[in-house]
Image (tube, rainbow, N blue to C red; front, top):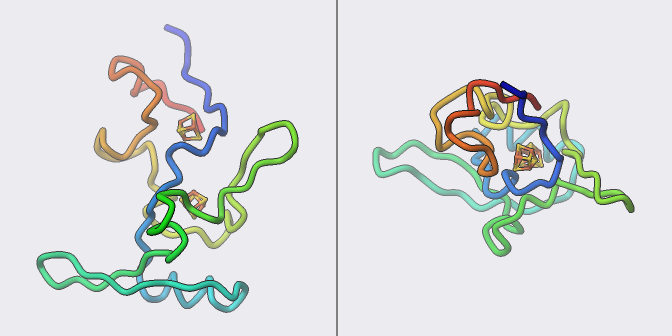
Length: 105
Ligand code: SF4
Ligand code: SF4
């Protein structure tokens, strides 16, 4: 079976939640606005305001060839680091379920 290859389209980079420490780490390098939110169970987390407004993470940037990457890759939140390794709603929206085991990013 052929392995799925990420095209770096950025369609999975939408509304990533940041823990407080992750938000503070980003704010050391970027002047960007976060909004505070909470799960129904009361766990506090933060969302990028621009991502809330557009449903696209502002840190996903594309070059002139349409090849995209995470601008904060080294300090991206844990949820982004675990992408593709967790439950099926946390994996590429472009792969067929049968191919999800062969995911490569
Ligand atoms: S994992 Fe999928 S949605 Fe995300 S950048 Fe790669 S191809 Fe696009
Ligand atoms: S922080 Fe990086 S990996 Fe996470 S959603 Fe934004 S661009 Fe994608």
